[in-house]
Amino acid sequence: MAEKIYGKNAVLEAMKSGRTIHKVWLAQGMDRAFVAKITALCKEKKVPYTMVDRAVLDNMTREHHQGIGAEVSDFTYAEVEDILAAAAAKGEAPFVLVLSEVEDPHNLGALIRTAECVGVHGIVIPQRRAVAVNETVIKVSAGAAAFMRIARVGNLVQTIDKLKQAGLWVAGAEAARPGTTSLWQCDFSGPTAIVLGSEGKGIAPLLLKNCDYLVHIPMAGQVNSLNVSNAGAVLLYETLRQRQQGKKNQK
Image (cartoon, rainbow, N blue to C red; front, top):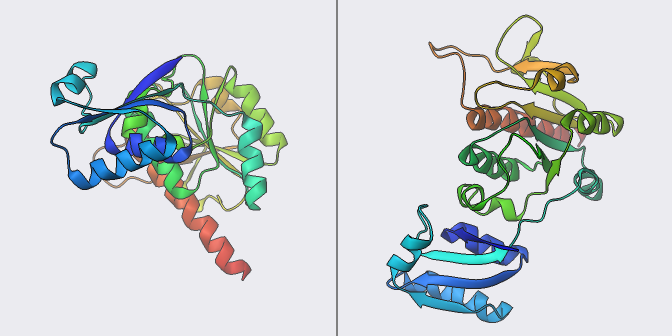
C-alpha cells in the first residue's frame, strides 16, 4: 500500500530518512533552489519526479501542499521494544511519550514535532479511538514523523506495565486537583514516560489509575487548561531541561 504526503519539510525529510518514495510531484513556478535540491535527491535515490501545474496538487489534497507532493510507502510503526532499545543504544535513560486517544491529526503532528526536538526516544499511541499517522499528521510534524519511532498498540494499560517493568516512572498529565503534583516539583531526569490524554476527556480512567503519579501544569490566568499539544510541549521541554541539567551535574 502507498499514501501521499505533502509539504516541503514532510517530503524532504521523508526522502532523507530512507522511507520508500514512489513518485514526487513539483508545482511549476516553485523556488528554483528548492526544486534543484529536491530533483537532485530524486536523481540520487532514483525516484521519478514530474513538474505539474499547481492545480494538479490542489486537486490531490485539501491540505496546504506548498507546491510539492509525494507518493510514499505506508508509515512503518515501531515496537515498544524498539523504543527502549534506541534509548539503550544511546546510553540514555528512556524518554517516552504515551498518548491516550488523541484524535486530532494536527495535535498528533505537533506533538511528534516537539517530541523529536526534545529527544524523545519514541511515542506510543493506541490502535483504537485515536488518529493514526496519516498525511496530515506527517505534514504538521514538519517531517519529524520520518525520524520518530511510533508504536501503535492494542492495549495502553499493558504497555504502561511493560514500561514500568523496564524501569520507567509513568507520569500522567492532569488538571490541578488534590492528588496531583506541580510540574515544578516533579523529577523527570530519570527513565520517564509522560502520558497525555485526549482533547476532551483527558486520560482514560483505567490508564490514569496505572500511572505512578499525576502531574499538573501551574496556571496563573483565567483559562485553566491548555490544548494537548501545548501542554505536551511544556511537559516535554521541562523534561529536557531536567535531563540536560542532570548531565551537567554529572560532569
